[in-house]
Length: 224
Image (cartoon, rainbow, N blue to C red; front, side):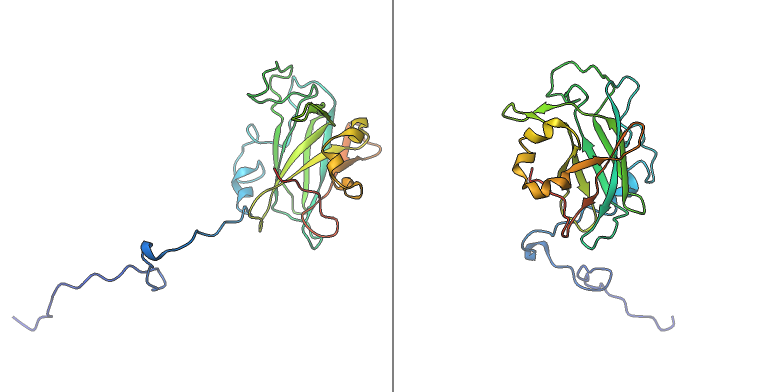
């Protein structure tokens, strides 16, 4: 036979990452893993204008065929701390129907609007714009039984944020705003960041509220 290469068993190499660095054994890992931001990946698959046609499940149009009450539109733009529009933000709203009842298992009262879910979701457009078509919500009691002014609960998800932000959208011109127990907790000079103003000259009522994630005009957000 001709010359041959000497063969022998090769000891197993330590596990390594793709770049060649050795993997640290689990026993040497200390502490907790870092948090992950909530965006911008969510918009691709979680909003109707993303990659999937989920309009029947998640939509910014809450108006259903049997929904009673006044139809309204709530719209605005989302801005970052530098005043630039956020084009890949996701917003969710949760609200009562016109009679002040939620489509929730904990609310045992009969719902006159059997298909009104009270939940909506949308992503912002390239200019940071958002829009929800819905029904003017009725008054609901707070945990102490005090009536709250009609409002929409709003959750905001955006890149660079470890947790979503929570706020409320109140409607301009509601007499109940004066006595709302939650608005009363907000300094008077900051309440405008929560009140959507009605646009003049519109058929159905259209309310506008811009959301500022940071900066001098930062929207009031709540710990929940």
